[in-house]
Image (spheres, rainbow, N blue to C red):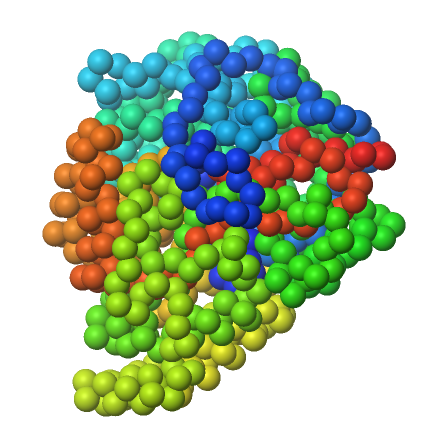
Length: 585
């Protein structure tokens, strides 16, 4: 996912847009700030029923405020792929499946949500059948119908309109490469999904997709009545099936959620409805918002911030219980457009990048955000550690005079003096502007020409994610988190030619040879894949260098003193909002 753009990654998000995948699970550690990674496993409980087990000490009432320094690009369920959007929408959208956090170590376990099961696969692996729970209602009391799930799936193929959403359906679902959604002529007649009765949803595939139950946890599988689809305006008045519903949404500024009176906890094995309301305030100043939460004066005691605590504020933490720690399966990266920047220049960018100073400016904690040298993070099955020369997320880069001269001379020798590097940054975010100035100075010192384009923080994801963005550095996804515990939610999604059209490409790679290798690995058994993905990881870095891995992330998020039930969701790397309550409502 992005932070995908998987949904996954606190300090990262303030500087760029990290995507993350969504569901990923970790059973290898109890989390905390002493480790990043651990082997993920695909834990499931197909028999799980509602209601969700109560959180110890939970109380009802009051409003929880979320002071967010980042600004989600929107809250349309079809268009959601950033981890914070996934986590927030879990409060008011329910999908076919969902992750429940079990035990003291909060291990993610996939359970049925609006489905009665985790799906049944046909013998040939090309059909998945989900039995649907009955009696589910939208916020207005109208019943959810099987055709609403089918419509939501059809809607996800209108990718030119919802360009930020996940795209596995285009690769795996029947006719996924040609079907264009329900808005075109004949769009209602899609053979990839059917509802033989109001208790059943059938999904037909073009090729095997054994991770289908994990994918079904995404918001795009939330039911949607066709009559209520207002396309780009749907996020203003979406049809809620979760414990909360949208009271008001001011894009880029604020999202207010209130209780959904039609939510039935007896059908929901995951969520709670402790607080009366959630008030998300976006685009806040990072340091100011985090300090407000730590000080917890007045109403700020009821507030949280889901970015990692800036290291400059660590001395101000008087109560360690105000920091919620845990793991996230994410890698933050600095992307380079391989279609616009030649390989020899990309190598010089890697040599000139001021990693050490950038980490300080970004406020990164060396314990929770260690430098990265690989694409896959340690938490994902298939990870193997390796370090290529000069590509381990550390070094002074062009801040070292000798390195700057070396890069400058090599640019001149290659006839690339004053090669222009262009990127976006947030003009109204102190950390982003400082990081921008640092990179600008380092690259110019190394002989590059720099074109840094300042845009409002509220719109940064829109610009960095645009397919025709007129920049060659820092496009999204600028970081990734596992969509589920498998490298299949990384390399096919990020580094194939199809990823470019889907809008998920890291580096805009287009190499048929690499496509064939990735496709061949996908056809192998899971155990065989584990041996092959590390080779692809290293090959991509050695042969193509589309990205500079910066750091692996884990969570270290501040909460107000009156907040209870706050835990890190390791599938997202942010809070599990549905378990939160106020100690004194």
